Length: 173
Length: 173
DNA sequence: AACATATGTATGCATTATGCATATATTGGA
DNA sequence: TCCAATATATGCATAATGCATACATATGTT
Image (cartoon, rainbow over the protein chains, first blue to last red):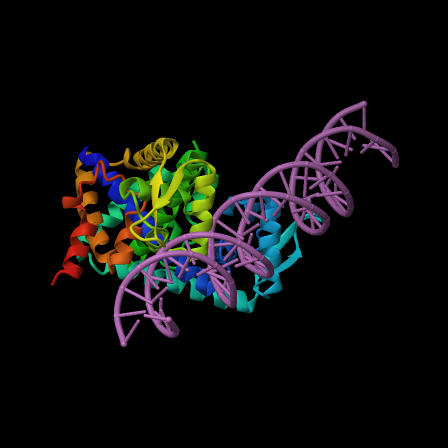
């Protein structure tokens, strides 16, 4: 029963955070849906194909093509030739990189407003709990990339990323 | 810097949780967008007007009218006469209440999968941190209702709800 | 080398969820 | 009684997405 209440609080926090995150981040991207995630992901992993991006964003293929169309029309993303005659490689333009910075900074700000309420000790506790949760939530390679699709790799080094660590454990042995 | 990493982890957890929550809860509701939240909210607060619902769901008025149209067409919600000649009172039908139960139970399940990873002590810590976060995130009456729009009031008594407590502190003095 | 199959991308068409501008109905007060 | 405020509804448009399908390139088999 007490656990059920904690579950409920967790759901409310997640919902509330994503509400404001989505709003702020969408405003910066100039597009909604998965567009902000596309810009952030392409910044961290330049040269992704449409198909690879599609799996990270959990969209249909046509949905991803259209998303890239919109971003390209806005001069945020470039389609270049990929490793293959079929495959494309997607890159951010200069404007796209700027947009990405704005998105990440809006995200930091929004999250920071909520975290201000926590004492330094609380924050340390929170980090530990979040690591455990993230590790448990990483159930497949696809989920791993999806979880990190809005992450700021500049502040979260990959050798300490619980998602990557869990992912390595899943694939290697 | 360490704080920035914690922020980032928090954002990833929120995103990951809402991903699966939205999927499961949408499947149960048979509608996407704010439809699940509408059913949950109307179950907890029967007789809300369209305008009141609109503020909780953070939709435009026309958007809310159309949402109620869809739910009524599916025989999940009834429009009845309200306190006024203008005002409507919205109620769940029998089918709507069933749908609501399914939504809440899917939500519990999804959240529970993530929480399984935490020890009992961790869960207690987590509850405390979530209470602090929720209190900080309750910046207005509107946000208070929005935060709780998918909550299961059966497991989260209102006299211990950090959102309601914070909201009372905001309005009364 | 030829052809079947797989892979990657694109397009036509439809749908869901939503917003803006505006219309309609009811209420309450000057 | 008339006007402003409130509550709901409708016409029209848009954003973001999916399904079915088409097209282009690559790979493997014989």
